[in-house]
Image (tube, rainbow, N blue to C red; front, side, top):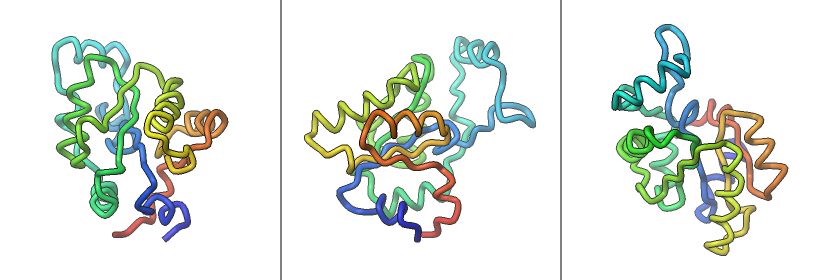
Length: 160
């Protein structure tokens, strides 16, 4: 296993996962990874459960099963209309407890969520990791915190 995966599997390390592009495949369009912002908003307004058609990723299911959900969390950007659908997807697909799911309206607030989590629970930031697919978000977390940053590609060779 890689050094980063070994680190993540340590019992006292807390892992936050992003959802779109990490726990959820980014496959919302027809033969494309996305749909337009307009269509996304229209479908949300209509009450569509956009994550009900998304399947969890086996490698993350296996990893989370091995890690256990006690120290597994979610930190993801979402519109308020998506909250219930996204939470349900994370809970049903990965067994992540509902109170372990933090949703925010801006990627910029992810670092403050991680820092507040560490401070409130008196956990060293060095024991918290964020798994993301967006390099800019990882860079921001790395710059403004002591949390570990993990790109999704670190899991490409993970085998349970």
